[in-house]
Length: 164
Ligand SMILES: *[C@@H]1O[C@H](CO)[C@@H](O)[C@H](O)[C@H]1NC(C)=O
Ligand SMILES: *[C@@H]1O[C@H](CO)[C@@H](O)[C@H](O)[C@H]1NC(C)=O
Image 1: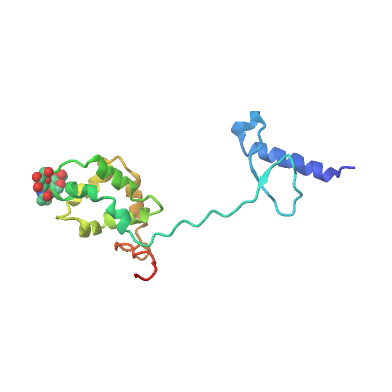
Image 2: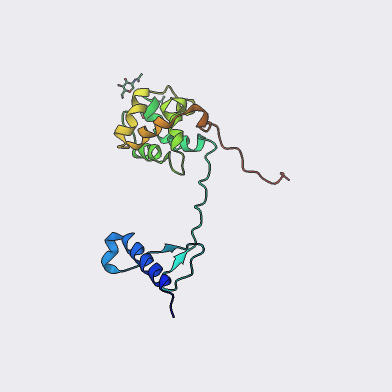
């Protein structure tokens, strides 16, 4: 005799699984379902053991992300280079890659000038989101809390075995 409470549970799970994916409602495909500890395995509802996402690699320095903007050096410092190159825009847009959006702070506050060969033209610096069509860059400036911004220093060398 099948326990009726199990049947009810199965019906609920199926209903839930279908309602989780309204766009696929007509396919009657059951999406991957997290295993619920304590509940019996239900063979026709595959479940996966939810594993926590690996922690994002912590950004410890902003030198590497900000250096991606070095193709902008001419545009930012040389009056006769009046257009940002596509490499410059590519670099500017890739600064936040890998969770480094906070490093835009070193750009917004002009720290980037320390890495440039000439005098930073702030007008051009602040024109980058516009000329590169990258609005996201500006939003990152809102999170520039001094204490939380990794330093603009080159990465420390990876721990290596003693030199021979
Ligand atoms: C500025 O750019 C012009 C044109 O590319 C170049 O000839 C000149 O040497 C540059 N000046 C500096 C200081 O780099
Ligand atoms: C900075 O760039 C702007 C826009 O290209 C330009 O009008 C201005 O003359 C530049 N300033 C200096 C000091 O070169």
